[in-house]
Image 1: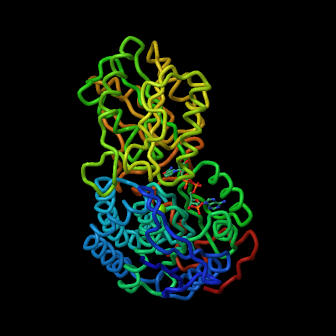
Image 2: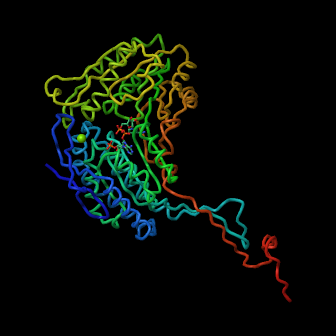
Image 3: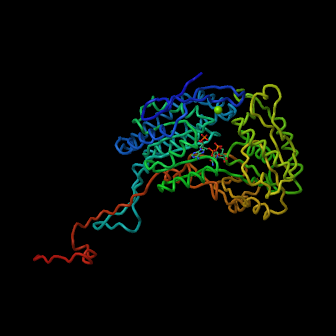
Length: 506
Ligand code: NAP
Ligand code: MG
C-alpha cells in the first residue's frame, strides 16, 4: 500500500507523532493508501514556511516569466501523469474513470492556463484614465500578491479543486498551504510529489492532509495567513468567514447550491431529457452546481419524468475503474447515510418516489456505498428536500403553471450558484436567464465551466469568483501609484496650507 507524507517547506515529513489513517476506496470499502494526519502544530509549520517563502523567498519578486516557467512545467508533468492521476482519483473518490479522466485532462490544461496568466499579471500596470498629465504626474495601479493563502478543498473534484486553488495563487505570486478533504487526500499528496520534482522554491507550496475541524481552524485563524480560499459546504463556509474575521483575512468561498433547471414548453426533448439527467446525476449528484430542482410545465410533467426514469434505470452502476460504469458509489459510508436520510425525509414530507429510493446492493455493489438514482415528484419548494443540498443522486421535480411561477420558484432559495433553461427560443431563454439570481446559467446545456469564465455564487452560494480575470483578481491586492513629474515646488500650492513657502531671490 502506498504511503504518503505531508509536504512542508520543500520536504516530505511525517505528521506530528507519526499519526496516519487509511484512505478508503468507496467502491469496496478497502484501504488503498496510508495518509498522514496533520495536527494544528503541523499546520502552523506549513503556514510559517509559506510566510517565510513570501516574506524572504524569491517567489513574489520573481518575474512573471520565471513563475510561468515553473507553473508550466508543473502542468506538463501533470499531463504526462494524467492517466495515473485519473485512476488514483477514481479509486479514492468513487468518481467514474470517464469523469476522473476528464478531470485529469482539465486539471493539466487549467494549470497550463494559469502558467500563461502568470506572465500577464506581473506586467500589468493600468494607467488611470483622465488623471495623468504629461510633465505633471503619472497615475496608475498595479496588482500585487496578497501573501499567504490557506486553501481548503472538498472531496467531489479533488484534483481539479487543488488546481483551482493552487493555479491562481501561484500565477499571481502568492504562497500556499493546501488542505485536501479527509475523504480524498490522494491526488493532492501526489501533486506534492510532482511539485517537488519541478523545484519550486521551498515553502511556496505546502500540502497537508488532516481534519478540517482542527487544522482548518489553525489555517483560518493564524495571523500569518492573509487569505482563505474555501470550497465546500455553506455551513463550513459560514464558520470560516466568522473565524477569518478576527484577523480580517480576505476570504473567497465556493459553497453549496440547489440549482433550478427550467424546462420551457418549447424545449427540444432530444437534448433536454438527457441534459437534465446529466445536470443532476453527473458524479452521482455530488456536484455543487448540479440542477437538483427540475422545473417542468404541468402538462408535460408525466411524459418528461417517464422518459427520464426509463433512462436512469438503465444506467450501469459498478466499479468506477470499469469504462462501462456510468454511476459509481458516493464518496463515503458517512455521506451515503446522509443522502439516505434525505430520501427518508422526502418520503415523510409527502414527495412521491418515481424511481430509486434506496441503497443499491446487488452483487459487487453490496460492499460499496451505492445509492440508486432517485427521482422525487410532487415536490413543493417549501420542502426541506427542495431547499437543502442533498449532494447525492437525488432529483426533486416540481411542476409549474406559468414561466412567472417557474422563475419565482427558481429564485426562492438561499443559494444562487447555477441554473439552466431549455428552450428553442434563445432570446426568450436569455430573458429568463437574466432573471435568475445565480452566478452561472446554462442555456440548453449544463456543467460546462472554463478557466476563462468566472465561476461563483450569488447569495449563500459564496463570495468571490474563481477563473477568468475576476478569479485572478481575488488573489491580488491593488496598489495605487502617483508619480509626480513636475519636480518643482511651484506646482504644489497645496503645500502652502501647512508649510509657508520660502521666499527665494530668483
Ligand atoms: P465540508 O464539510 O464543507 O468540507 C470541505 C472542506 O472543508 C474539507 O477539506 C473539510 O475537511 C474542511 N473543513 C471541515 N470543517 C472545517 C472547519 N471547521 N474549518 C475549516 N475547514 C473545514 O464539505 P464536504 O462534506 O467535504 O463537501 C460537500 C459540500 O461541499 C456540499 O455541501 C457542497 O455544497 C459543497 N461543495 C461546493 C462546491 C462549490 O464549488 N461551491 C464544490 C464542491 C462541494 P475534512 O474533509 O477534513 O472534514
Ligand atoms: Mg477515499
